[in-house]
Length: 113
Image 1 (cartoon, one colour):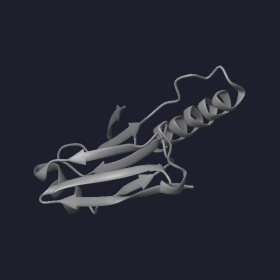
Image 2 (cartoon, helix red, strand yellow; image 1 turned 60 degrees about the vertical axis):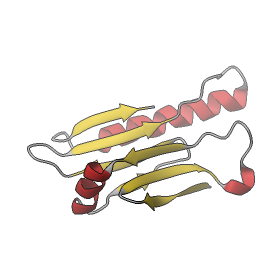
Image 3 (cartoon, helix red, strand yellow; image 1 turned 135 degrees about the horizontal axis):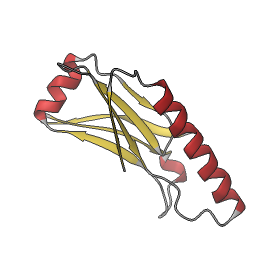
Image 4 (tube, helix red, strand yellow; image 1 turned 30 degrees about the horizontal axis):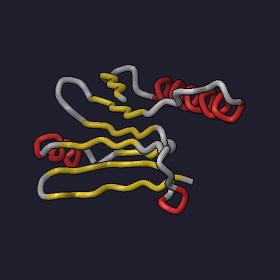
C-alpha cells in the first residue's frame, strides 16, 4: 500500500506517492511531481487529474493548447540481482508500460525520473 497525496505550499503544488510512512526505511522509493505557480494553475484548470500508480510511479495530466500533456514521474528499481528485486523490477516495468499504453495518442508524453 502506498502513501500518496497533494500538498500546496503558497502557489506551488507537490503531488507525491511512496511507501507508507509506517514502512519507510533509508531505502524508501518515493516519487513526486512539483509544479510551479503557472503549472499549478494549468493543472487546477485541467481538473487536477492525477494517479498514484504505485510507490514508484505517479501520473498527472495537463490540458493544454494545442496538445494535452501526460507526465509520468518514476523511480525504477536499480539492483535486480536478488529475486525479490527482480520481481519488483518486472512489476515496475509492466506497470510503466501499461500506463504508457493507456495515455491518449494525442497527448504529449513526458517520462521523468
